[in-house]
Length: 325
Image 1 (cartoon, rainbow, N blue to C red):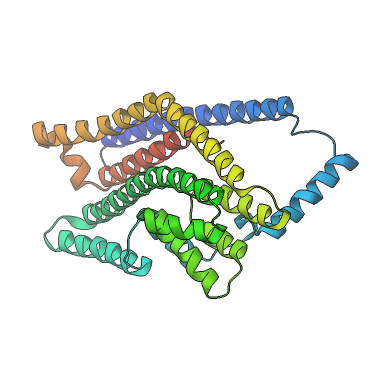
Image 2 (image 1 turned 180 degrees about the vertical axis):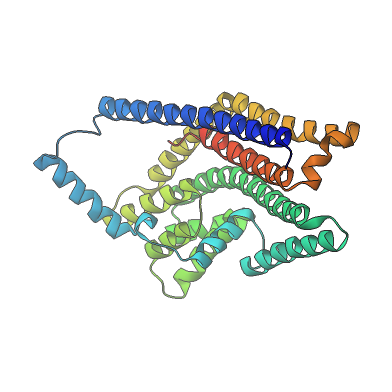
């Protein structure tokens, strides 16, 4: 190998190592600041304190309530159950195994076709990964749309249930009315609850079982509140109104969070699109300059590193835009 090429390779590796080191240091400092802010918030809220007899009693009471209500935090789901939850959250009727096999088959077929057409292993592998990423993004959009629809329908369902209970209907009759008046997905969920109760399953257990099969936190809140209310007694109509008010407040907060994180999402899209657009523009305008990326091993390795770094950066920026409350 020519000494000049060797020096260029060493310089590129050194520059890449320097940029990667600076990026890791920035991530490290950001994570440290995040932990310090989290601890300060916990101290202000009184969450972090000494383990006194009162706190032990409260913790034991909470663990007992979780055990009674069957909270899904303590239930470890298998891989198949998680895939089914994702499929239901996206609103797809095809089985999860069939969807996975279809995506995997499409990715493998694209790799084989690209390789047979002379595109090479690296290009075929990149196209296969692109297909998986596009499918994952599409599934995320489907889940987001269904979550918005789910929240709106749940508010309508709670209103119908509160009015039905005040009119003298039993709780199961209110659920039956929701399943008849509202379309999927809420109508189907309450239809399953009514059907399981008719078959002999306990109503509280049926509600908790349905809540464990979804990713929606509002439905889990509803299931836990109704299960506790059925065991302890109380005014179910007022409970439905209170839950509706809580869900409306959470929806307003969600909208505000989306507004506040919109700048982060726009920055993410711009930073991801810039290197991709620049790469294709240089490939079209200066093919001789970009030929080394396709013909040499070092160039192909750099393309792989670029794809990995773009995906990693997108993941980090997505995590920075997520606010849990």
